[in-house]
Length: 136
Image (cartoon, rainbow, N blue to C red):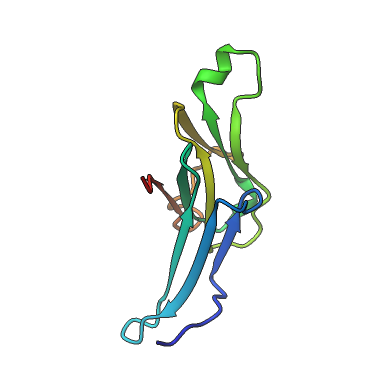
């Protein structure tokens, strides 16, 4: 296998990796398409699930930010923001954010563009993809 360090993919692990958690990251180059493929495996404890955000920034990444909000906490008077991302500086890059988040919650994901022109089309093509993984 041809394992490489990626220059186009940035992996951000949010929070410390506790003893009950295991993180495995592997980057491979597809010899046919010359594309880098990254596999991230995170194992959380029994009360958590894996949140994985893949964010491909457009040509103006500094305009992009996001929040993952626990809807149930908004009525409890505590900070409902579970995870957040901002201060992106590399354009046309894939950022992967991987974290263990509480299992028994209801989440809203909100992505912002400070110029209100979105992350697609007029200033390069960007996208986001969210994957929730339950290892139990």
